[in-house]
Length: 274
Image (cartoon, rainbow, N blue to C red):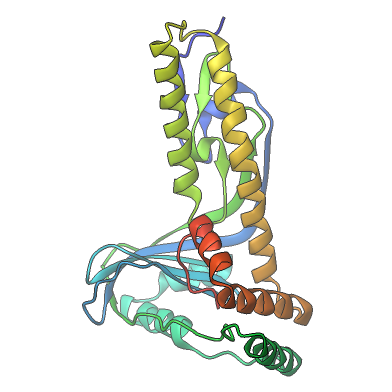
């Protein structure tokens, strides 16, 4: 029998996981996530997360209240370091430029997109060309800027020797879909539910069966989600014309078919995926 002695919730560089001696599958994205607290130019309801996919990585604004949002900006390592070194005012200028700048479009992709818009209209669907405007940033809260490395990670075991892993100690994802914290919440929810079931049924909570059930339940959910997010990152990080065309048409069709859009929004949250 295995007694639960410790819950490893100590992040992506988990010392608990290393002490368990389990295999950990990981790779780096050669990007940093620049974070900070932003002051918006205008007060609004500010209840929807907004995200834009750029050539260097996505920039996302997550609502805090009517005048503030939290920033998560994925960037190549060198550019992130340069932005961290800028004065606050210059950083805000660069951020607003990233949010609003119109990038050059590949002509062949534009032609295909126009054809797709016409096709969607002919079959009675919206053309999927709508675009939500981003908020404008007035300032960044002083000393709120920081950065952390981005990567993928997954522990092949979540339980061993009376220890159980939750959150980033067990799995690590790119922040582009905003799912890292949700995966962690799911771990805690399932772990506490299984513990409660064991106590309610009179089962000895030191028995390993419920730990193994936790591991299998969470891995069935976490692993497909992680690889889907990794695939999205690779799709959006590339700038080859076939990739640009694939993601552009995919988003256009998704915007046109409302039930499909709702299902994707439930999975990744509400984002502006340009």
